[in-house]
Amino acid sequence: MISTLEAPLVAQHVSYRYGGGTPVLEDVSLVGEAGSWTAVMGPSGAGKSTFLYCCAGLLKPELGEVTVAGCALERMKERDLTRLRRDHIGFVFQDYNLVPAFTCLQNVMLSDLFGGPKIDTQAAVGALADVGLSGYANKYPADMSGGQRQRVSIARALASCPQVLFADEPTGALDTRSSRTVMNLFRTVATRGTTILMVTHDPNVAACADRVMFLVDGCVHSTCSGESAANIAGRLALMSEGRVDRQ
Ligand SMILES: Nc1ncnc2c1ncn2[C@@H]1O[C@H](COP(=O)(O)OP(=O)(O)O)[C@@H](O)[C@H]1O
Ligand SMILES: [Mg+2]
Image (cartoon, rainbow, N blue to C red; front, top):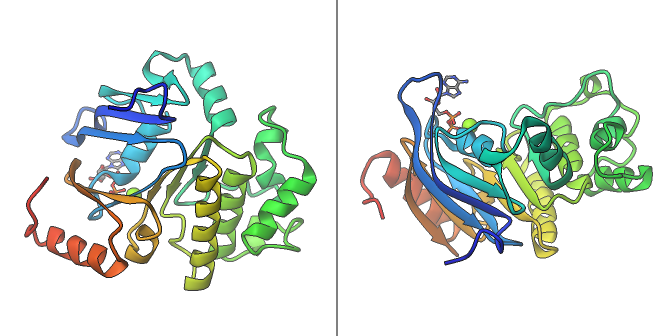
């Protein structure tokens, strides 16, 4: 058993429901060791994004505990939670969450502009280059395609060298080549020690991670590691048809 002190991300028995409705997550647990990369897959509405939000301190679980970078989120004041998110967490939002009035460069340097970790201009330009956006520093989000905006949001999440990176469908708007570039980047940061939790519906993307956790109806259905994209796609298809037993 890995202690919460050793693993940068520990979710224990997390349950959540929106506004007192039916449970969206039930008893979901996960240990993200330093440098580990976990993909979360499952049917639409399974609770994948909700789980990511609970782990990143953006939603408060109804039951269970989440520890990030050694801090138990439940016991933190909102101000300290904001600081933890700013200093130790990177989040790639499914809808990018770029500030329209800011240039790409300013978006990448957002945490620095708001008193977070220092990101120098050269590092931010480098982060944009890493996602294939050299020369886009002074463009505004409105002048870019969905895929380009998604890559800006990835550059922003990585520029502050977070201890834990959360990414919700980070390749949803990307073509195969850009997806591969981003997956190579994720592998590089994981090798340097960043813990990654990534939601994806793409088996080719999930196969790049160290392991895959399948969520169905808010519960962990099963996990696997070292499977090919074809095998992951096969598992997902059977799961959608309810033909694979839970583990
Ligand atoms: N803000 C919200 N208010 C109420 N219900 C929500 C909200 N966000 C998501 N849900 C519901 O919670 C369930 C899980 O949603 P979500 O975590 O977004 O699933 P996934 O990311 O796996 O598609 C779905 O039934 C969805 O309709
Ligand atoms: Mg989602």
